[in-house]
Amino acid sequence: MSFPTTRLRRLRRTPILRRMVRETHFSASDLILPLFAVPGQGVEHPISSMPGVFQHSVDRLVETAQAAFDEGIPAVLLFGIPEFKDDVGSSSWSPKGIVQQALQALSKQIPDLVTIADVCFCEYTDHGHCGVLEAQEVDNDLTLANLAKQSVSLAEAGASIIAPSDMMDGRVGVIRGALDDAGFSAVPILSYAAKFASAFYGPFREAAESAPSFGDRRGYQMDPANLREAMREVELDVEEGTDMIMVKPALPYLDVLSHLRQSFDHPLAAYHVSGEYAMIQAAAEKGWIDGDRVLMESLLSIRRAGADLIITYGAREAARLLNTGWEP
Ligand code: PBG
Image (tube, rainbow, N blue to C red; front, top):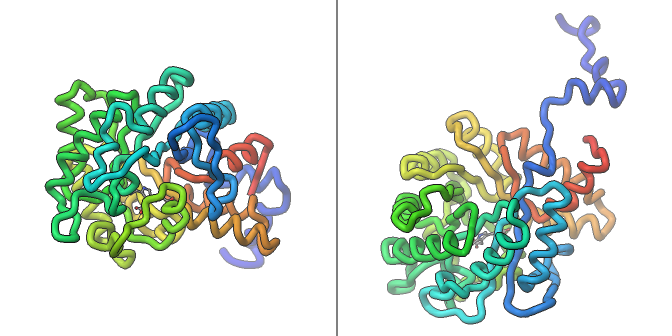
């Protein structure tokens, strides 16, 4: 039956009708807040390309995590800017490492908070690449051993979930084995399964001080043109035992999210990355868009495409809007 019998506008007439037929919802409990830990005390250093995002010393990071937790955000994703960098990133597996310190403080002071530890080396190496270099290339297999060390060290410090973002082949299996051998068989893995070599990571590299000193990451992160390869990446991580999977970035890759949702039953996360957040903030600052509405529409779309969980720098803003009755 078509027009004039069918009129789709009938169910759009009032807010209550729209609410009744709305297909996609999300709440603060679907959101994950990324945080950056730096050495020191009382540090809250703003990131110029990400208004509202800071590098925090552990004391301030705990306060921010507590505020987010009180707003209904169940989890944080931790990155660290270490005291020193070297060619392999050894400060990432030191028991006194910056993320290890943050994890110890968080698990003591906010025991119910879910702490997700990013596993990678780009913040910890003096060359800014995500692993061990051999003739100017990141060596996959040499890097695997270090990923295992970093993961176990983060689990020992209290990480609830281990999240490898390095894009080495075989990392999930190696990390799973290392965690199990060290007595952490209960610690889940959230793999950055389909992580693309994206220009949208620009502002993050300011926040994490992790820009590569030469070249780029195209030799290990995925080609933005490839959907079928994303399916293979996820298949392999699933075979190796990942508990959850992630697509990153989010908005430019909604098709990838949607395909993965149809093919895998694993909990699916999307990373709404730094550049996606920065674009909203910049345009809102200029008065060109309504930043709150664009943020919420972005997050809703990521959910509609199939994500269960969304990692976003706008998590607290979104939680506040949701808690005060925001609707599309
Ligand atoms: C570390 C890592 C990156 C991001 C998350 N983990 C940067 C990169 O791969 O260069 C980017 C996150 C963002 O842009 O918000 N490997």
